[in-house]
Image (cartoon, rainbow, N blue to C red; front, top):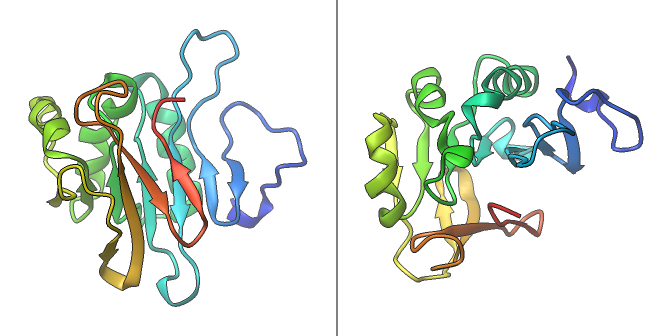
Length: 176
């Protein structure tokens, strides 16, 4: 499936990626009968960083098949190079172990407070990267990607961290 075939102006099934903005999709399952919606996103960079992908909050195991299908449709076999985790809850981290197994070189971006709990899921990321505690300085990642951690301590969890994509001017806030 071509990633450019999605349009925010057309109806889609609950399992197709929803384009949020240029090069950014909501890739989780939107279940109209659920009391809790999971918000998994994929940001793919273009230009000289063509194909570099971020999976934001990998989502619930209930949504695993849809998230995996949407990731494959948008990234092919390459998968995301980065995975961000806002906090430790299972609706955010349930798919993280499987996503790390499928993408063994991926870097997981999360706070140390979040990692203290997430590691108990037997997550084995290729790399871990922690932002400086309570710092909102931008981080320059490989390939010149600038992301800014936005600490949200005690806004749902002591170590919660939102992520601001400076290029697209999008805040990935975690739970809505």
